[in-house]
Image (tube, rainbow, N blue to C red):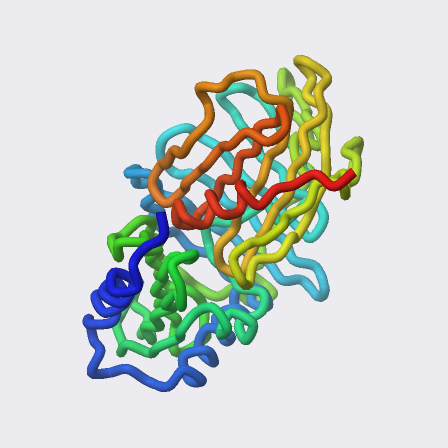
Length: 324
């Protein structure tokens, strides 16, 4: 169901009202977000942060290394089930000690870090309003607060706290379609690394005894076929585009599953197309900021799922068509 324009305006007003007297220009706000994007990609740093999502609070550490043209990153969970995520420009490796598995994927649009790093800030200006909302202090760093407000009902709003000195992300809050807190990240420790302090680690670690290696668990390449171009999208919310499209065979039944990953630069939605086997799975579902909608199309189930409002995933799922 589409949200009324009056409700959308009310949600935006609620997000804006905090520190509204300190609001700055859109260009200034985008400059801060661009500074954040550059810093998060180009600098070497390490820190600890808390991650609130799906009603659970998780503590994590991050080491991000920029070594010449190479970028490596290691994320580790510090509570709950132990796991480690390693990535570079080519591979994403997940180490699961409890099940003694190491899963290696090619990097794709679906491989999202909890730390949001926009690729094209200026492009986002078409679909989001940027507003400076004042200053704060996070993890002993002075920060500028920037609100990123959706221009329509197809996107969530967001706030980011950007370190004044070096531009790194200190905190982010993702709002749901009603303006409530849906997901939050906040650093408790964060420091830059100089060349003498940069730790060494391998993206493809040596397997310990008893560990199983699983390659190409998801994503394109390494045994996955390009997407069937006959599956198309007739109409999708403005600003979303297909980042990747591929198909893979399911090991249990050898059926092909078509997958497309869409993004507007902030929100991301994945579409899965496969033979329909269970009518009860049709309809909508949600978990925290993640919404899903499944519909039937010519004997196939089409599921759109992502960190986007319910109207977005439904619109995208119902836009899927097959053109022979």
